[in-house]
Length: 431
Image 1 (cartoon, rainbow, N blue to C red):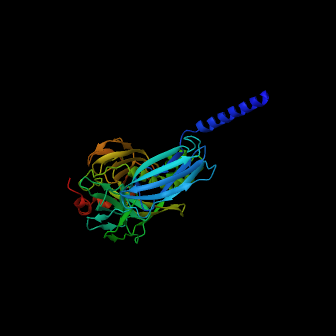
Image 2: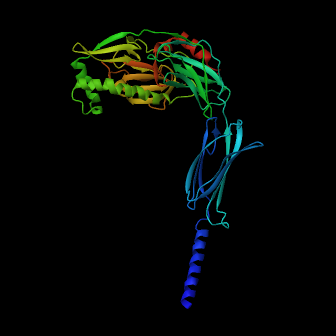
Image 3: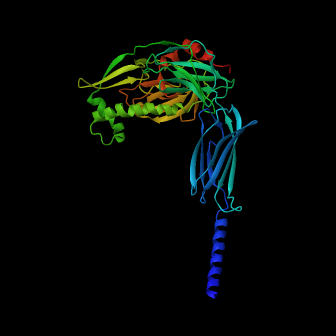
């Protein structure tokens, strides 16, 4: 009998111990993850809820309150041994734009609280916004040249986190001004389909995108066809500076083809990154300076055929103006701005880029020396370096470029005082 009593006592102790373990081993409610947990929701927003609990999930409820209205979005019981679940919850279509509150309640299957389990609650404050911003264009006379630039001024019914002009796959950002307007300097790219239609777009904090059209006139351009003969003298004198970039390439001609075919696109793509380093307002108020006492050796948009031993080996487009006078000529800043780049840049050799605001930048390439550094504020007409033949240059000259948010445009416009006044300065808000 004593042995039986001991067994019974042991069984009771084990049962009590097991019960205590079951009761106390889980005293916290389910872990939950919810998104979006803050900010804005739009018409297409879907809520994501993730629940986890080692004792198993029992039920969950999601209720949204807006003013005096209450909508139950989720009310669900979970099968035994459900330790994790992910719920995708659609918002009630009766919700209005404006603030709302989301309340979550989730309970597990723990033995705590007299078998009722542990409960987790959470509350989130969100803002519903389904209206796209309304954009209004206030500038007039958008006369564009193929390969040229234009400026548009516009307003928005609400603050924008991103806006600008989109032409095919290219996007030119706009910049908010102190008077509440937005300015966007954009290009009609030289290689864009002339039938492409520039569109104004703006995105608000909720992610709603508003679109708008505007009146413009495009002057189509025919660019010059040019042939450049490549000889062994040029290859042996210029290609060694690029050898380290293509160590597996054997001959100077092969290096040239690599430079033109691979390095040139990389350099031009890199201009997009430089273009983002810009002031939100213009840093200038008059036409750009053309380098004085220089002759034009090549123009913007020239379609070049490169020949070697009488055969065409490559084709490229020249996206600047080549100016030449005397060797190591003093190079002047075309307008006031901030230096954002000074270094060797592939095909452009030693190069300076000056930012003039709104994504507008001027480039000075093939230099023999550089007299400024990144961060310097320079004045219109200030000497910034000397001309040279670094990079992919056949002789001492200045490659001058104008770039709008990473896209090269025709510098001739920016040297023209009347064009600058009528198409840019006249549209700027009073300073």
